[in-house]
Amino acid sequence: MKPVKVATLWAPVWQAAFVALATSLGGFFFPWWWPAVPGLLAGFWKPGTPVRSFVASCAGAGLAWASVAAYFEARNEGILSARIAPLFHLPGGGALILATAAVGGLTAGLGALLGDHFRRFWRSLLLALAAEDVVIPPDEEELRGRR
Image 1 (cartoon, helix red, strand yellow):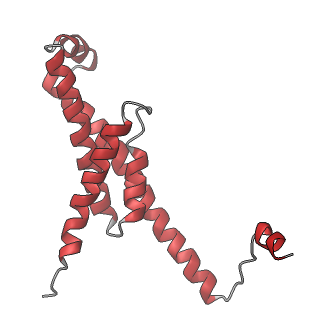
Image 2 (image 1 turned 135 degrees about the vertical axis):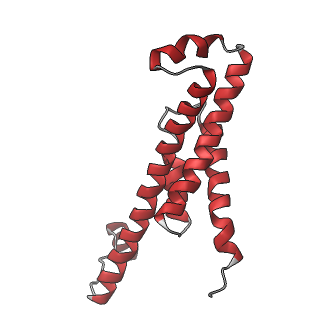
Image 3 (image 1 turned 90 degrees about the vertical axis):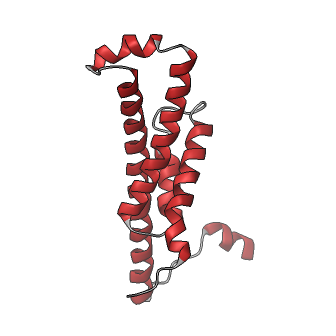
C-alpha cells in the first residue's frame, strides 16, 4: 500500500475553505454565478482529481450559500421563505435553504471542473509544444524593448 501525503489529504479542505470564503465575501457584490469564479481558480490552482475539485468546491460554496440563506431566514423569521417555497413546490424554508445551497454548490463545482480541465489542457499543450520543439515567438513589446 502506497503512503498518502498529508498535503494530498488537506488539499480539498483548503480548496473548500477558499471557495467558501471567496463566495461569502464576493456574494454581496457580484451576481449569482460568482461561486463559479473561485471554484475555477481553486480547480486550476490545486492539482488533484476532477472529482475532488468538484466535491470540495461544491461543499465550500454550498456551505456558504446555506449559511447566508439561513441567516436571512432567521432575520425575517421565515416569512419570506414561507411565501417563496410554494412557488418551487418545496415543503418549507429548510428545503428552500437546501435548494439554495445546491444551486451555489453546483455552480462552484462546475467552475472547479472547468478550472481543473483547463489546467490539464494547458499542461498537455505545453508538453506537446515542447515535444515538437516549437519555438514560441516573443511578444512584440519585448521586441520593441530590445531595439
